[in-house]
Image 1 (cartoon, one colour):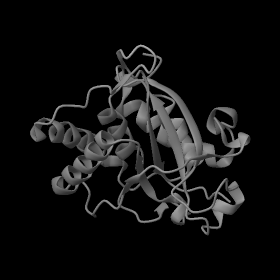
Image 2 (cartoon, rainbow, N blue to C red; image 1 turned 180 degrees about the vertical axis):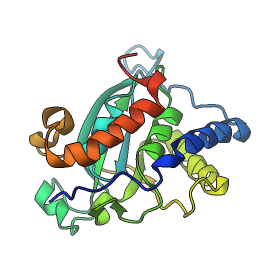
Image 3 (cartoon, helix red, strand yellow; image 1 turned 180 degrees about the horizontal axis):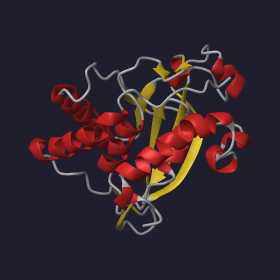
Image 4 (cartoon, one colour; image 1 turned 45 degrees about the horizontal axis):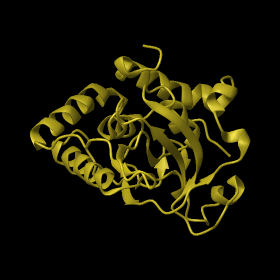
Length: 227
């Protein structure tokens, strides 16, 4: 069962967080990764792989899905489960915490429009990455902060991001975000997909999801799909 909680205690740090993130990339001297290339198996021609996928856990997947659906360049978001040991788990199984899975959103995006850096920026802004196995009133390993990377470039960027944010002091506590290779993704039941859009007046959506979406809309106004 979902619990209705208040907004994250660090919401007032959004401006500082985004400023630190921007400075981190500049100071690192590392350029954003370019879209990956693949070789056409029939012609042998090297072509640009148009879309990229990353799987992120930031607490309740209703929140994570709703946030990333706002961002320009994000083509698809699917709510589901990753990081556990049970194949094809149900929502009820994951909610017990016994499967090892985290609630995640699998995000497919166009790296020519939005970089993995920006995706990570939104990720670290939309939840509190310093609370272990909880987000607000949602408690359990299924709500852990996690980045399941799909390639080495994503791993390098995520590790750099976490390291730079920790050293910046923008958070009073250490970041506990798990950074681990992607292995499997299991979509959640149909009724969980696009949940916020389909249930805007549901109690949890009004108390928890909407404030997060509104926060991201304000912080990333220039990145919204309707701009």
